[in-house]
Length: 109
Image (cartoon, rainbow, N blue to C red; front, side, top):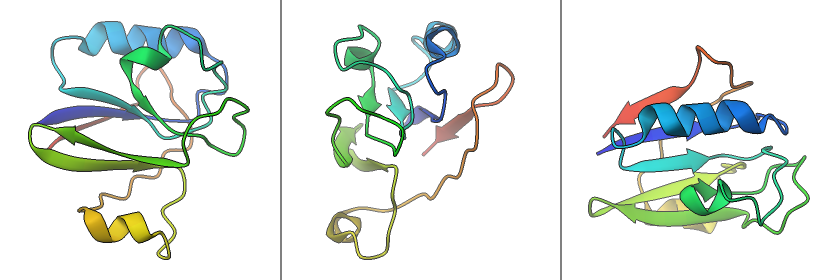
């Protein structure tokens, strides 16, 4: 399984669109870990697994577990140890401070 994980684009729709276009057909899922500042009706939102960060105003979920290639993937802006959903899946803790044209996280699991 190969996934693209992004976060903190803070309203820069173009960079997210460019990344999704670049990796289309190469990854099994697009994951956004919050602070997109997208509206929930933005067409890009329907193409990714997205959760709410502290700067988001749309009604995105706090966290989400998605099944990709038979594996559970938890996407969350807050990986607090008290989150009961962490007990249900393997966690890869990714910290990204900004999404730049030459910086994204591509994982093969």
